[in-house]
Length: 150
Image 1 (cartoon, one colour):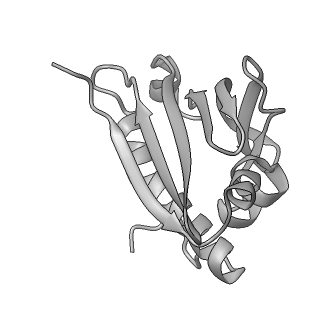
Image 2 (cartoon, rainbow, N blue to C red; image 1 turned 90 degrees about the vertical axis):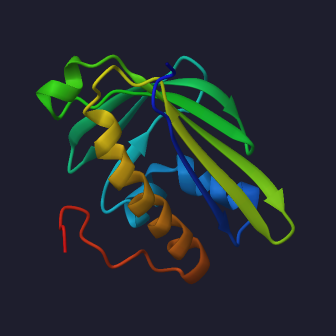
């Protein structure tokens, strides 16, 4: 039996270079990712962190970097004890130009058995990438509280 995998596809009216910048520039990520910041030099083997207010939530490693086409990194949440005990999973972002838009495919895979990370990202990634799309197309992030159920 294969492990569960999460795939999210969206089309964003932007260029591959602008989308790459939005995905990899910490100052930019804070603007659409509800205050969270990604930090890395984006070279293969380098560390990458996701944090907010100086608190690191996820510790990752860059696995592939092919600007502006593909980036892949390990994903290891450390803010939750149960998730921190799981092995890192893998996030891959593929950018494909399609005329005036870019097709962004997000694949998150290699989860531990009975993963607690999978349900967490299944709700989180759609909010993040909807906010990214809205931000790039309108200049404003989604007005959404990611911790609210309503």
